[in-house]
Image (cartoon, rainbow, N blue to C red; front, side, top):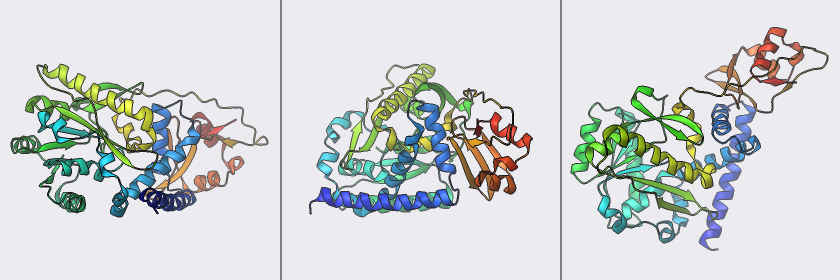
Length: 367
């Protein structure tokens, strides 16, 4: 059996696991993450049929499970994986800010870094004990990758986004020859518009924190976009994007143009690899609040005619509370246990007219 066939069988096994996980999530209404992802797809890729959202959700979940299995990485052709990368092509720009995106798996990014003996300071949203735990996990990933490149001298150290001395810590690492790995497409909370620039992304306006572009300008180091994708045979390939140089730029101008260029490159990659991107789970945290207004009609209520769900409705539980969501508009309504049960059983005729009007007004029910 060749290595491609082994990889195929591993993927098929994980896909069976994913089907079981999704079936359980549906049965227990643990669907917040799917509903959020689906809403973001409706907003940013409206031409994509909603019927495809489940397959995208499953694919991203599959890739996440595969990323936790180091044995899966034993099946890769690393020469093909990194054929577009070499230290010679990167050397003129190092140390740099490496802007990585949530495609594929982080371990996939480590291979070219470790092969080329690059030292990296990786920004993390964790602090304290959480940061220490993540550093231990990273050390294990690095140790695994060094099995393929035992002569590598690479060091990967984590720095916390929350540190009050982060700027000085990064400058110190730059001066020590480290490059900074930054993930600009992820945030654990809604961004603060006052700390952001507004850029265009997939036909919408979003807020992106200034930090990456600002640090690039102040440290006079370029931004190197790094992408990693799975091909049709589930073989990852790392790709360097167009390098963004801070040379001769004014502060405000550079922050805007560099951030816009970075997200244009992300947008271009999504044209082919939209079903690889984990950012669909949290891109709503970058939105400007200029949401599309949906006007849903409230019909003349006639209980004899019955009512039906909008096909883009999603019921889910979260922290022992019950909710229903219109995945297109993103409108979420909290429900008491009784109303949740009635919606779950599609006992719409048993709901009071006032509740029905609320459900129709928000596109949960349709004629």
